[in-house]
Image (cartoon, rainbow, N blue to C red; front, side, top):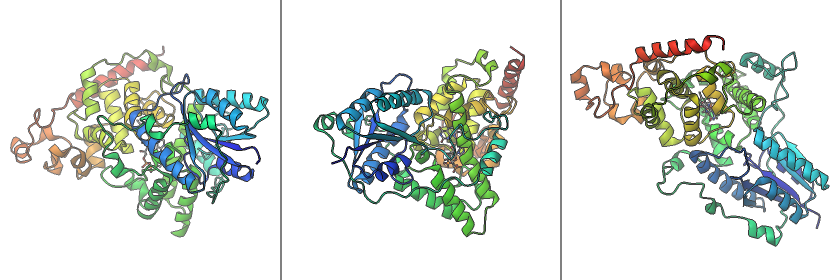
Length: 485
Ligand SMILES: Cc1cc2nc3c(=O)[nH]c(=O)nc-3n(C[C@H](O)[C@H](O)[C@H](O)COP(=O)(O)OP(=O)(O)OC[C@H]3O[C@@H](n4cnc5c(N)ncnc54)[C@H](O)[C@@H]3O)c2cc1C
């Protein structure tokens, strides 16, 4: 029997359009597939609770997909470098293949392993399985990374379609694991990735299907029901107006190439590329832009891109932070968003911007606190998109919203959730308020409040800050940042 080829899965939990897996299959040798849950290597950011919940499902479903191909996924726990070195040695593998990652610590691990294993005579190959373009592939005229999104997007579009996605294998010639490594494998359940006491993720399973099949279903539903009209519907948190593909992309249950090509075919079938198609592709490209900047600035989650923000004195008011986290700020659109996040592990993009702006500007709480909360509670918590999104809203990020853009939670609610459907879904204690007051219950006459069963300060909080005063305070505070340091 020929020496096996190893495939190391990391945030690419799918069998279709998986370049590392396809290359292993093409080698004609037996294939051994594995994943590592690494909670010990220095520099790796520990996953938050909601992402751990998702990872459990991804690993479980990938194992099932591989079993359907006569293979399986071996699971290990521990330090990646040590484990991969041991796996390579004890299997006598001739090659190891993986798809690339872009965080600093991940790159350091992969580079060290590449060197070590290549020195031992193994063929080590890595592939792009996560992005339309590698972070170093699309540069400006000066050969530098783009600092502004729009020209970056134009440059990406000018490159034309990404390569066509690879088909899923129909069968794998599975290798067999040597006995000592069998003993080292761990059952998925033993990793306790899913919460138990309390099981706060109980409701998640009814909403999400954590698998490659789930990703394909979400894509199909998006193409059938949402793509036409996306440019408008994406701004409406109260309707199913976006793809909800983000957690599937985060864990690589689907690739952006697959999405790109499916969207292009669907658009061709309805007569060509529309503004909706372009808007959607631009969102996919925002994700790429975030990865370019993660690659450029590995400490994206901890250091403001604009250094003037480093000396800003953020508020230490813990009560305000807790009220925000629990969806008890007294601003209905903010509270609906924070409760959607807690209840479903996801939040609509428009509302992410509103709640982030509220935390950073109305409450003057540091963006890193918000980033950390999202990191822990989002099923799509992403090492590039999340810190990038927070820095963007705070005004310290690349191509960011200007500091004086302070989202007004009342008018934003009225504009994007005009009938209050979103607020009613997540803040049921306000559900009987008429539309005119759903985003500003404090303005409702007392008899209206009474008829709706609302007692401010009792059944629903009074606003924890006054909007106009908080806005002035923020403008003043951020004005000081503008002074040269
Ligand atoms: C403060 C803040 C934090 C965020 N944190 C995350 C995060 O941790 N993980 C994450 O995937 N997205 C994050 N986003 C971006 C965006 O909110 C989500 O990607 C989007 O809401 C996911 O829903 P969807 O899949 O239905 O999006 P769709 O509208 O269907 O878009 C399709 C895909 O494009 C990408 N995309 C869309 N909008 C953005 C954007 N603004 N920035 C980068 N990529 C985008 C996503 O991969 C998304 O799945 C954040 C945005 C903000 C403002």
